[in-house]
Amino acid sequence: MNTKDVSPILTALGWSIQTDEVGDKVAYYKLPDRKIQIIYGIKTLSDSQWMYTMESLSTDAFSKACYLICENMGDFAPLVIPWNSRKVRAPRISETHVRQASAEVISWAKEQNLNAALQEKAALPTTAPGTGPVLHLAALAVLSDVDRLEYYQSRFVAGDRLGFVPYITKEYIDRAVAQAKRMR
Image 1 (spheres, rainbow, N blue to C red):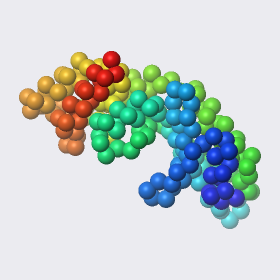
Image 2: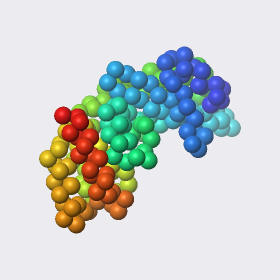
Image 3: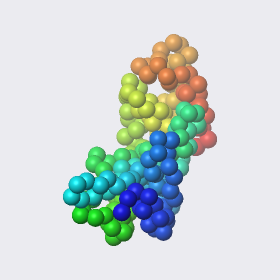
């Protein structure tokens, strides 16, 4: 089996399949209150095959907040990412392996506490690196923490960036405040 053979199996299981900008296969599975994303593939080794899935989990509200705050972010922003991705190694990957991996990822996603994940992102420091600041602002917006976001807004107006990375501008904060007010 190869990566292209996995896609119809996942589609039959209810996943929607896309190819991202670098050619990786990405699948999405929608549950009532959350959305799962996996990047998947199959590697053939000399004596076996290895199927990997790198999963993440989000909500529509969190992804939308990230998208509205940082206008160049995609339409899926990971709220929960496990420490380890799933790997299946077998002499030959089969449909049974793909079905089992799908079931395990969905089970993992159902077990995640979304409110705790939002609270973790909201607790990130303003000095967080990378995409941390956008995730922090989005979590505050989803949690409707207008007071904290308006505090950030006032500090930016006063010239205090609060340690935010350089790409975070007052416009990001303004959009987070607006989204938090809409979430009330």
